[in-house]
Image (cartoon, rainbow, N blue to C red; front, side, top):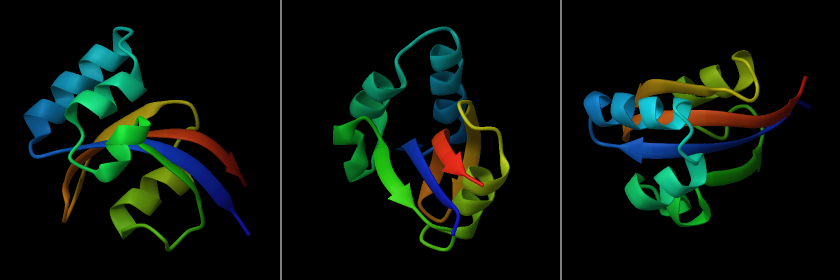
Length: 93
């Protein structure tokens, strides 16, 4: 079974998401940004969600984690919870 490991930052607006993505792409630390800005409890752990299988996260999240490039920051991804930046740490295809 395919497994992936990812971390994310959850915020209320696309604008905030875009702003944080620009900072990360300019060299800001993803985990620090997650601790400072994420509304998800995982923010305390730098946004780390650990390892999970397809179907454990909402569809929009899964679509990114299991189909996009590993090691990059993806987003903004809109879900029922808000806007996410997602960094795929690893995936065994």
